[in-house]
Length: 205
Image 1 (cartoon, helix red, strand yellow):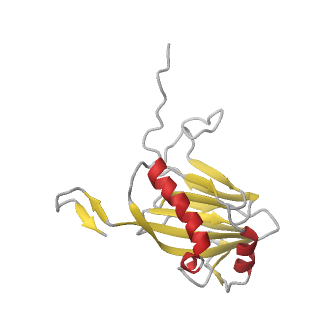
Image 2 (spheres, rainbow, N blue to C red):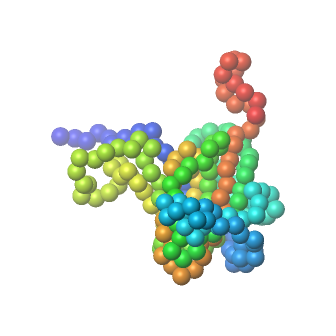
Image 3 (cartoon, rainbow, N blue to C red):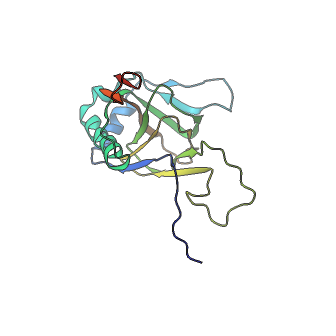
């Protein structure tokens, strides 16, 4: 028998990039922010030791970092998706998760692409994605791969940017280190003329 090909059809594509920026400066900046604890007192099933920053336009205020992230978004759209879609970052916000903390499974509404920038890394700083098809396996695989997994965790190093479809469910796994996990999350929406040439299937954004 000859295997002609194995096709990972219709993937939910996640891009992982490393950018060149002064992460120590960014960490000092994040450490000085005013933080609000999320879901305080609402139960262990929600976020734990997770905090949000004071604004939803963080990258607008930090243009150098925004430029580095936009380079990753452009590569994701043009080189990976093979599209020429114009876009803009609609929202961006700082987050932090303390030791022992985590963020529940969620996805981002009203958005096309989403992403996270991590200024620092650790072996437990992982973001885990969930298979939207919710496949059920009859047996445990001998080895987990992108072809047979229902979840996939991405390890995080310093200056990592992760970009993914906004409706792809994800969670921040437990911070098992003794340091705070900081990140900058963002959402992306297409701009300009979108769709076909007839008025029934196109829109100006």
